[in-house]
Image 1 (cartoon, one colour):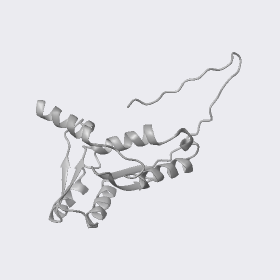
Image 2: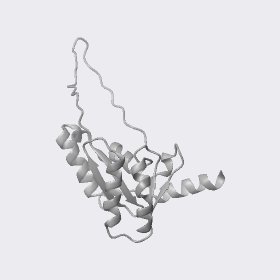
Image 3: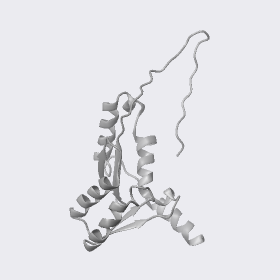
Length: 167
């Protein structure tokens, strides 16, 4: 999927402009995804930290899940920090295990497809009208993920199994 890059024309002598907002607002999402389109999201408008990840995982582990649970992580600093490592043994006692993907392999991480689809397929141009509209649209998509918004991970699995087996 390629991002859409719009372009336009203007009449000679007429200056066009787009309002620019300098904003430090952010919405960070930490997602835990099952391949049957069950999505658990934790969010923060602050920078994510290792302690935030620990708190999210601690909450997630207390919920009712079929055991064992394997949480697949990339090599982001917040996933590999000391706070996460300190809790890893506790989670393993609760039948929840961390699996770290190889470096530079987002193609192996199914949740990357969710983020890509969210940004480039499901969010509409009008959703960017304001910060409030954008947040609302994101949360609507998250709430309806698995019903209205679905992904088929079978192709991803086939493609990556073939890559792994041919290596």
